Length: 232
Image (tube, rainbow, N blue to C red; front, side):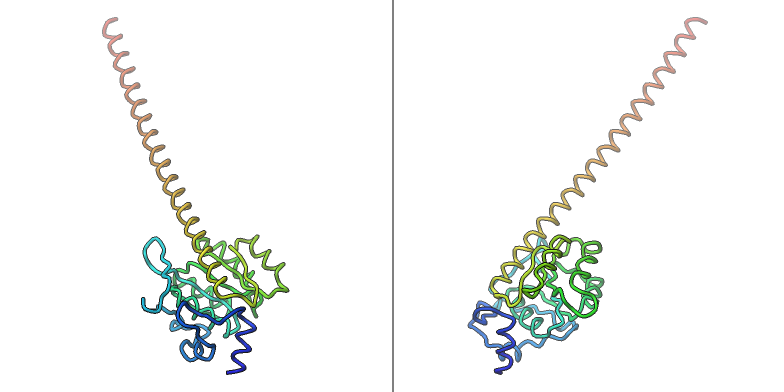
């Protein structure tokens, strides 16, 4: 238990309040929520009784979050905290596993470590921007890696959070990132709808102009025939 507490202290600043419910110690968290490296059981959907906030998207469904970190303690702490806030959470231990999840199911936001074995969080972000542009990204990084975190934001990440982190502050970052994502999604949908309306109106105008041209040609032909009849 002491070792677990020291591990949590390395990851999280402030009191270990993983939900709005009474404060839970790390040993209690470990016994109540084991988070595998990549398993469908790592998705948590808590009951209304255990949910202090239930963030929803435009379809009134909980947002889907994907945690990507090779440290099982980070995955466990974040999964427990965010699940208590009403999010549907899945946790994986590598960028490769994250890409596999993205191919199978929609994800609204990714919380990813930057420094990981194999593909880094930066590599994951580059692929995410091109293949899943509507998935928001918040990067997790050690204080010494803030330069890489800034690079991640230039590539398209919404924000970065340094370890150790305050869980409540992290929850605010997640909420703000999802709000921004929703605005971007709605903005893109509006522009797609606008482009579609413009295309439809353009087609209607062209059809109308074509019809008017044919009518003018028919009228010219009729006038020509009438003029010839007079001469005859």
